[in-house]
Amino acid sequence: MKHIFQKGTNPDKPTLLLLHGTGGTEQDLLPLAEIIDKEANILSVRGNVSENGMPRFFKRLAEGIFDEEDLIFRTKELHAFLDEAAEKYDFDRNNIVAVGYSNGANIAASLMFHYQNALRGASLHHPMVPRRGIELPNLTGKDVFISAGTNDPICPAQESEDLHSLLESAGAKVEVYWEDRGHQLTISEVRAAENWYQTL
Figure 1: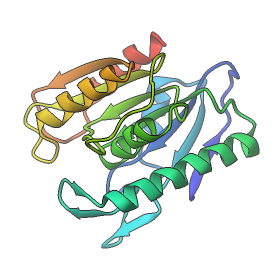
Figure 2 (figure 1 turned 60 degrees about the vertical axis):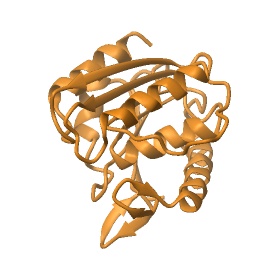
Figure 3 (figure 1 turned 180 degrees about the vertical axis):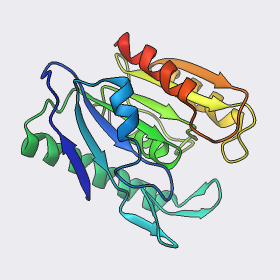
Figure 4 (figure 1 turned 45 degrees about the horizontal axis):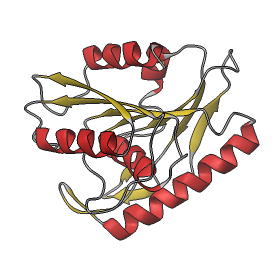
């Protein structure tokens, strides 16, 4: 997968896995990593799917309707890539914290839905429930931050609430941050994510 890896200055810090939104690239979330943790490794990945020339992490059938088969396949692909990257760049595979926005947040959530130890934690900005009606792995000890907009036209508030309860039911510790905004990623929610991250 096309990606950027930047070695951090503190080996004890997590590796930040940056996952962009639809139409983004591996450059998009680098400024977020700078805010969240200047000392951490950065692994920023570009989605392998193209929708009318816009990079994504998995296909969708329509706005808000995921191609479930492709989602499962792409989640497995990303999971395998993380294993390879940890070996190649010599970082702790068990200490990855994802930072994802929109489509990137959805694939990060999907990693947690499908693989118990894919991530140590995740900061999910404007996520949806990746899959419904499946049993989640035991996520005890995992930390998740969800930021959402009460007026988000792409990701209804109910999606974030449902994701919160599904992750919590699987044992994850979840913090939710609401803004009276739409789907845009705001500096105040990034600051809230930074505050959450400091408690890990």
